[in-house]
Amino acid sequence: MNASISRGLWAVGAVSSVMIALVSYRYFIPSIPEPSNVTGNLMARPWLLVHAGLAATALLTGPWQFLPRLRARAPRLHRWLGRIYIFSCVVGGTGGLLLASGATAGPIARAGFGLLAVVWLVVNLQGLRLAMTGRYAEHRQWMIRSFALTFGAVLLRVYIPISQMMGIEFMTAYRAISWLAWVPNLIVAELYLRSPPRRKPVPAAA
Ligand code: HEM
Image 1: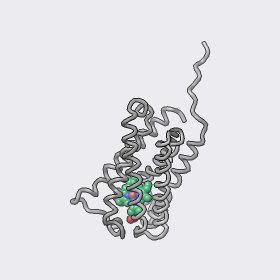
Image 2: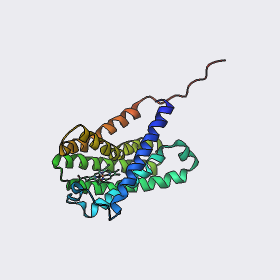
Image 3: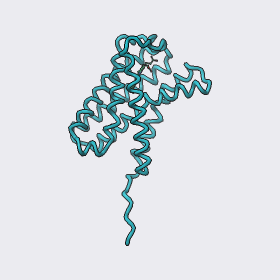
Image 4: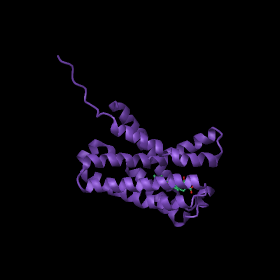
């Protein structure tokens, strides 16, 4: 992929991730009412706060990990952000799994969110194991898969208003989006990881 396209995609991804993360921390402000479809979740107490707080932290810390300059110039910062990211994914993902079991949207949404939570946990633990054993090339690949899943939280919040604008009934859309928010991301991440490595342009001969 062209370097300026990938920089542009990174910027759009980082800005939207930070925005959705900051909006998600609203659950910690008692005066802001929670949406009824979420408070109806059988596992909302206490898991909604655990999940929303930590999963939002994963979204906030993840994008910077893909900046090669930051990794090279501040490796300690990369490691600390990485620890916070993985902890947030693993504990926030456990909360997501419990919330999935109590989702009011029925078995299709429970399965979509539940499988996402399991895959999120497995991918992050694999990424952590590879970093701890010094297998950094593979660690990078698994963390790309991880953030493709984390970014599903942004896409879910883009697809819901789009589906409403298209006039699709909310629950029908929500059930489909519990899968559409992450399965295509994983396929795109896989295609990216399998694409030939980018080469620097060879300067023209004088
Ligand atoms: C990637 C794995 C994730 C899974 C499996 C997951 C699962 C869930 C489930 C099952 C619910 C309850 C939905 C319902 O009852 O209908 C929920 C709600 C929520 N999740 Fe996640 N989630 C994930 C990632 C994230 C991320 C990265 C964020 C960061 C912003 C996030 C933030 C929230 C918030 C704020 C809610 C409350 C509902 C809302 O305000 O939209 N989740 N999640």
